[in-house]
Image (tube, rainbow, N blue to C red; front, side, top):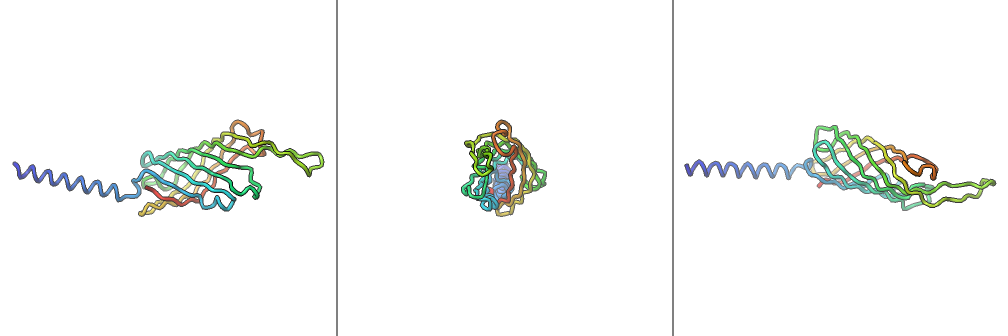
Length: 179
């Protein structure tokens, strides 16, 4: 009886160690990601994001976009955008995805031109909330590196009449790490 009990304990210990090492070694099962948008600097901005996986098919995340070069005639100053993603791929939180997002944004106000069409006055920054949806694709390597491409479109909700436009577009080609 003692021998069988000892064998059972040893068997359970090996099973437990094996199960832990498989989960720990699999980068697809890790819950967190950090990412940098590689195309944001081309427009004089910086964008970084964090994503937390809820399960195999869904995640919550947040991204921040800050314009540092205002000489490129950009209306956007910054945005903070929380989002929810649903993944359609077979691997853990990867492949094709759809997202819904909210966005708190700071945008330059309308430019009001004078009768001579040469001088203008600019209203102060406008703060608004945008809601939208997007699509994308995510690839995760065995080492945990993340490559992502996405595009999203949204509409300003409250103060669109105080700006030169009433929509927002999010474009991303990002690289990151899953941990």
